[in-house]
Image 1 (cartoon, rainbow, N blue to C red):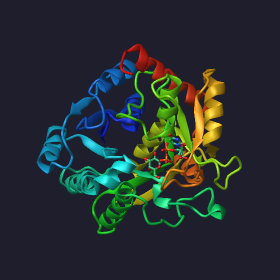
Image 2 (image 1 turned 90 degrees about the vertical axis):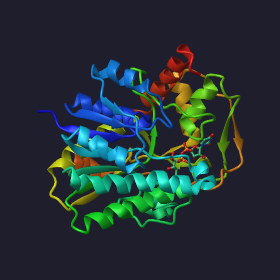
Image 3 (image 1 turned 90 degrees about the horizontal axis):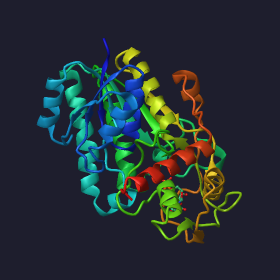
Amino acid sequence: MKQTILVTGGTGFIGSHTTVELIESGYQVVIIDNLSNSKIEVLDGIEKITGVRPAFEQIDLTDYQATENVFKKYPAIEGIIHFAASKAVGESVQKPLLYYRNNIVSLVNLLELMPKYNVKGLIFSSSCTVYGQPKPENLPVTETAPHQKAMSPYGNTKEINEQIIYDYIHSNAPIKSIVLRYFNPIGAHPSALIGELPNGVPNNLIPFVTQTAMGIRKELTVFGNDYNTPDGTCIRDYIYVVDLAKAHVAAMTRVLDMDADRLEYFNIGTGKGNSTKEIIETFERATGVKLNWKFGPRREGDIEKIWGDCTKANTVLGWKAETPLEDVLRSAWKWQEKLRADGVM
Ligand code: GDU
């Protein structure tokens, strides 16, 4: 019989791609999403790709009773992948309590419900943001790198949630967990049936690049050209969202097999860093589209350079990022073209 996995935030960017990979790997998926940052039509995309429409419950995870009702309705749930969270760094500075409520209360509710409904495995979406600005001699960052004080309430919720999971498991709770620390997820499913749907003006680089290439934005500003990097622009580890989704399938398979009380951490990235300027050049080369861009001042709070050592995920999870950057950027552009063709933007 197919194992049932609850995917919270399953209509979001990473959640939808992970749902596709779970279904294609033989899992049954139940999605919880409050649709605060995604659209119900994402389910159509998932169904077109996989031939399966996942079960969907539109509820808010901060509502304990509504969340408990989902566990009552689907008693076969064996594992949870918890994506649902508010994720805009700037907004979190303006509305910290909203971020603490949404991101922390929802995790606490799920953890309280897991033993009650005999759900054993939890995969938690964390972020390389917990490492802060690593010292250059510590690049690439490994999972044992020291954490630094978060730069925003959003980043702090990732740090606090990691600590909550740690404390709960160390209280001998009958659950086990894998924490995945993502680097920068980008791109879209090769079918262009699902992808990233930013609300309003995008904060993240790739949606800004594709929207500028499409003429929706006049020009892209590269934030800073005087960093201590080879071309002066910031460096990130850009991981293809489909590769990232596959890491969740590997982690879910592993967590369901693990002993109770176990907790593991994995960096999920490519292991390579690319500068903002390299991303622009590669995008232009891969798509043949010229990008209108200029240098501007640094963005407050930006990390100069970070990329991950992903050896542990490669060896223990047996997972590796495998899609070339050109293909990833082409997938992002194809998705943008699809949004235009559909009249979305
Ligand atoms: N950038 C630009 N111009 C833009 C947008 C981005 O030059 O218009 C640059 C940024 O300065 C940065 C790089 O592109 O060097 C990537 O920026 P993103 O905003 O796409 O990604 P970040 O690495 O800044 O943000 C990531 C996650 C966030 C949060 C954050 C924590 O996307 O959700 O975790 O790390 O630092």
